[in-house]
Length: 443
Image 1 (spheres, rainbow, N blue to C red):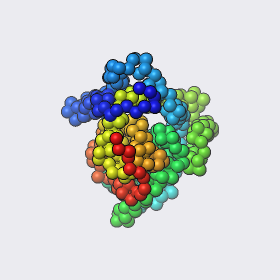
Image 2: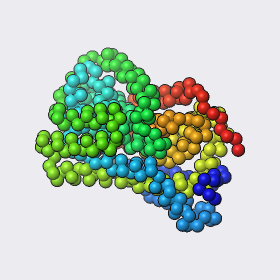
Image 3: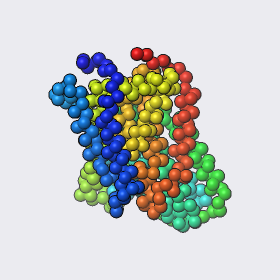
Image 4: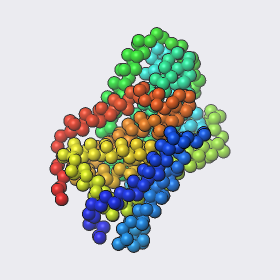
């Protein structure tokens, strides 16, 4: 089969991803709810890297008509795609930035600075707003949650406010920023796999995320007005430590190249850390290295998924999914719903929004071409739907980390995840109101 010739639909080619779901999701449910391991999150007993590695072996064993060398060549093409390579480099830079920013005290100082200027009566909507801004600047929802949940817990205890509500609004804000941040791994994955500029995806995304955030804020302001004024205490901060985050945020929004933004942020935090005494030469190097190490699993998973996706596509797996979508979808709207459902399902299965995007992206690109969905909208749908599910599932890292720090169950947070549910309604409404597109080519 030539490189340009489309394979025929073959549902069996999807076996590797099915095996991954059994290995990762099945074992995760077993160790989380049936036979928990002491001090171990159930969905982290089986490494996602191990599960994908076994799936890759199965993908290699399929299609005996192709030689091993031909399969290796397919994997190399998948891994060597320009967008995958750029993604890997950005992951490294984003890891270094996140590590140095946290070590320099930037995240905590930024949060405390914003909290100190918000009237105590409006501290709950303030926590949501702060979480949105910190997550956009940091590019990581888990990092934002790790920084802000202890603050939210203190605010709850000091002010006699609902702990689940305070933590829930932090999670919602973290997902807002993760969805929109220019240096988030989900944004990087969604845009690079679809070949679109980050600013174009941002402009499409903001039309969904901003109204959802504003409605969330209105709900939280109404809640605040119904409560009496509360004393939430005082929080220490240094303006100089917070300044680099605001600079990075501004540079990102105005569309500066992401590599320049990240390098600028790293240099600024090194300088601020040394001036304020929060960093030494050794700790600066160590923190950047630790941040990069934190990205290694994501990078390895990206390489493995790119390989598995290339083999599944060659064997007709993507055509099988497209055939199913053709039977159920009706035009452009149907294609867009297909992208959302596919990405959401992958996130439910993997409990990792970046991995979900990387798996769904090649199929979404085919749907984009076939149904006339603009690539920037595809990138937006990939990122948004994955972040919605990741911000809701109780076994995802975000809710597990938040509940672990706060000392409550992850399920208790679900009723207070206001922003993700509102965003979901906006996504559905935007697809229903979509016009144009083209009918798929019938085979």
